[in-house]
Image (cartoon, rainbow, N blue to C red; front, side, top):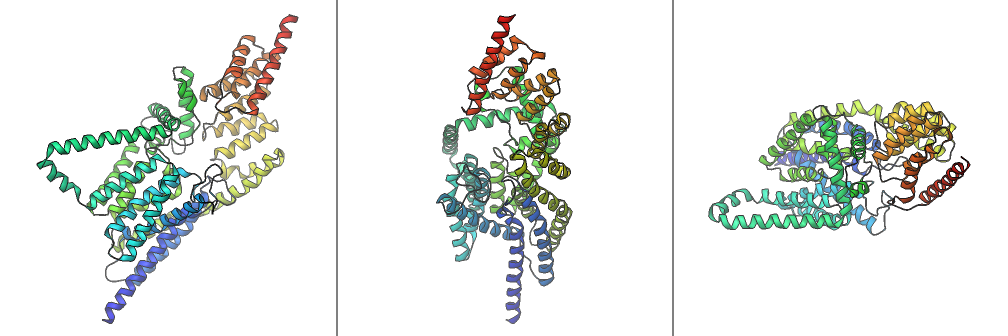
Length: 549
């Protein structure tokens, strides 16, 4: 009797220790970016690095404490951790909706602990099938109440996120979890043998319903949907340039920008494509982004690994974990979850949970591998985090126009932050303002490897213009008009260039003038009005010069 009691206590203590360790690791979702840019994620990586040591220590302690008997299953621990985190995120979302908490973005009321409602909705959609499965299988009343309560909270918040991808991911994954749990495969097979005609009619009807739902989702945000389709079209063109090797990790933006520039330069495009075109950081499709950066063969291999893990998890009956993976895979078709640390770490944990069980050696392997990863990353991540905080201080000088003082700080931080496009642009633009044109171009050309923003091309062109190289300036301005033809600013720069006394070209000026004055902008602003007024003044000067001649 006493031995059983001791065994139960050890089991509870072991489960609690492991649960708290995994919670500490995955709670990086709650880590804010105080003192950093809203979209900056290095703080979450620092949290992961530190929590990895805690996780490793807790696992080793649990293995020593419960040396004999059955050990804890990893999928159970991760499932309940996700239920708790999903509940906390849903409560935070409700508080934001009702004005009791501020969101992470000035334009959106609902972001949770994220900076955007899209990833937030995707996170909730990933956790919803886990909650459903725990509610279906949990024997204890308390567990059913918790999982069911969190499920209801998520269902209350998820529609407000207005993420069609998240809605689809949540719906399909929950349906699959319920079907797996109820063993619908055998039931469907039996029904097919008995009533084939009725099954075909139901399948066709369901397909029609899905088409209707897809159409309604498209109509809900038509420009957003067209923007995604155009983005994928350009991404596929980028893939076609380097299908086998790819462009390298974190090089998507540069590849996309060049592909979009080439596409618009050809001139064979629809007017709506010009309207919806942008300069995205991500492909909004993880599969296409992987193909761009890694090449098609490696991207397919990684997908096969994920599918095999999913298949293994279904075979082992880990339906909640598999539902979360399936939800994330569906969400990844039209979003960018795997560009964020919390999704990368959570996804890795879900895949491991599909394969591993309650084996002690598997837990030991997890402790060692996570601890090593965190140990290798910690020093560099701490340095980068500190550099990002100092960058925010330097930004104050930059925004105030104290470019000389800011330059010293940017130059000092450059070795640690040279992979951040916004940092490089600010550094290069500050050098431009100080008339250090050659150095500015060197920094801005590095920024082009990390970004597809046409503003970088504009500043490079202005540098060349200031150095007296008008032909190079013209090339860079023209590239900017091709990259995003819907923007008026590069046409304005070209018009001013063609009005230069040493580079005067009346015919080209007339063409650019017409573009500036007649082109319909996405958003009317004071800047556009001022540009048009200045071009009209330059036109009058041209008229007087022509009369004098």
